[in-house]
Image 1 (tube, one colour):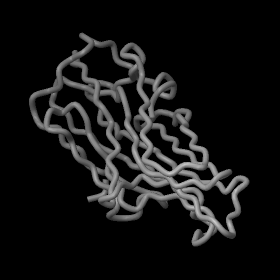
Image 2 (cartoon, one colour):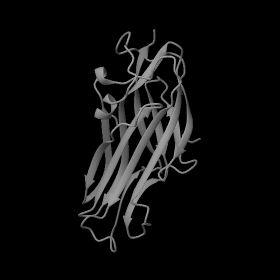
Image 3 (tube, one colour):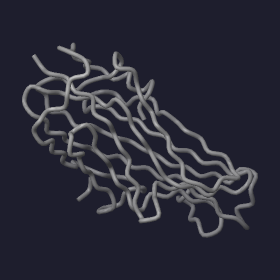
Image 4 (cartoon, helix red, strand yellow):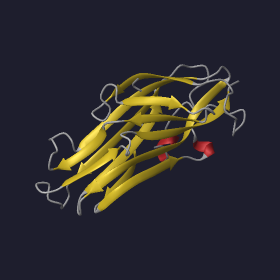
Length: 209
């Protein structure tokens, strides 16, 4: 199955007037369909989506998402991207926005090399927002974890009663910088020791008129 968000969220249009903030999640099951998944970071059958049991978050799991530079790298390996289109089916009377996104991975950067993780999201029909970026600098060899969140009053919600896909764009970059790409290898990956990494997007809920 094929299957962040700080200042960029403010630029999203179609904000609905809430009946109440901090709405509890709907009791019924949320279903998410992956409409498309395209990009060098998520070839077919390498990205999957799952919804938490309490309906407060969903995850996108990648298995081959790595940006690589130096020994063993091809000419297009330094930049990897993934665009995922999701159709989120929510119970009648509710709508949603994205309050927080957590991104995790691992990086090995030689001294002088750099890495970058960046992402944005937007609802179908809206213009893409600015990316929220997180740089990494070598020497670095460790897990990384970036969290992007927005204040409650700035969350943009899908218009009530409309079927619009949620588009998620992510990108990883690796650059040799002052390191020697003929002798060293540097990489940034959305990956973990078990071969996959879970990126979590946290729902914010509203009741519709």
